[in-house]
Length: 302
Image (cartoon, rainbow, N blue to C red; front, top):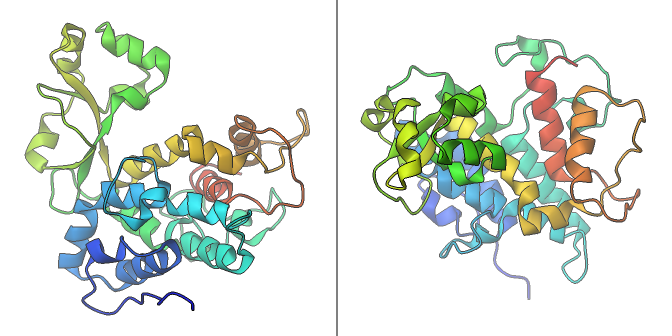
């Protein structure tokens, strides 16, 4: 018979629901974020590295988490044999948008033709912006809090994930050659840490580019220190480069070069073309591309 469904109730621990099957876990996390109190909020942000991995499945060696495969990966697999289940794929797709989309009434989500005005183009827009995804909104709120406060968590992110030129500049102590988007977030640590993690306000205060100049000596680990939204976005950007993420994008159609695309649409086509092999035009838009386009439309003018 069918396996028993897991349902979120008040008091369900975050650690527990992250072990549930993808569809149940995503619905449970959505309910948790919507109903959480201040104590739950603290737990949520302490657990953000684990949540990011459950959603994206970047750490394939992760143990003890049913979502270690990545909910985005599992949603894509539900569109194919032998796991094909269009109904469950659509359900998981919708739940993850409710969690993560920038605007739930955006062109990316509703299928409105590209170029449709979105109203305000910044995170501080008015009522016309529409409803945000529940987790997306919480991440933005935390990142907007004052630095060093209890409501402004920060996270370490491996510099090894940065582009090759940036890694070479860091390894040779040439911080001046590191692009500002990365340079302003760099910090060197005297020890090797095994995983990305939430860090304390005291550790955050030590962040800066100065210590990185000594990284070439091989005695320091170089990190990016990121607020909550930046951390999740950096993790999200790694997904197409992962084996399973890249495979999930391969069967989605890419617009022909020079097709007149601009802005968010052109950026999305560029991403998907990294792994494109044989387009299947009938396939619905990949969940990842829908999310990416919603972020580009939210933060950048159309």
